[in-house]
Length: 198
Image 1: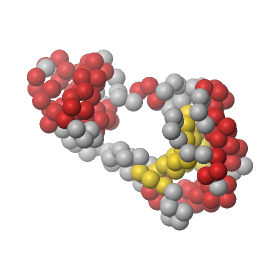
Image 2 (image 1 turned 90 degrees about the horizontal axis):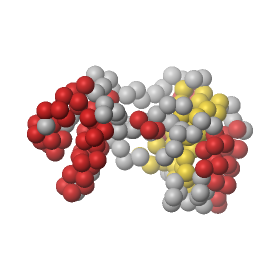
Image 3 (image 1 turned 45 degrees about the vertical axis):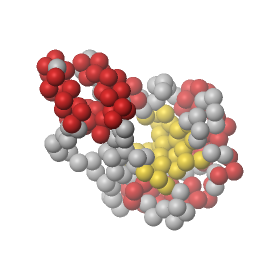
Image 4 (image 1 turned 90 degrees about the vertical axis):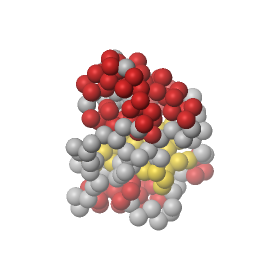
């Protein structure tokens, strides 16, 4: 995923669902939200808080509600991203323009804004010890340079790597992920650094 500096650049780069993403952008523009670019993609804030983002993928496009776990979800459209660390984040997936229901989207945005006004949010847990999965622990014990580099990472980056390994279902996937992240850890970077910023 590229890091785009503007919403236009992000939308222009989409090979699939470009028209649908522009439609979602129009809907967001008709609300009191402020359009920004965060993590290289369109993001919409309210009173300085991340409220919703839009993103396109090969098979679907989506709205991401940053505090979606607190929404009533009366239409039953929100799902967890599947990541254990994303307790508050919920996504609304679409596969066609026909699924874009303007009134329902605006109702969800309005509810999300009301949560901000009420000061309600699920805050990330800070200072919790990093749970290292056995496969990563074994790799760290096997290589002192790797262990030293891992210890130098911030707790947040350590958690990202640990979750990346723990979230894999199959042992082969865990091992291939370990192989992939080894040089990233040694370089002192985070797993999701390329999505951050902007």
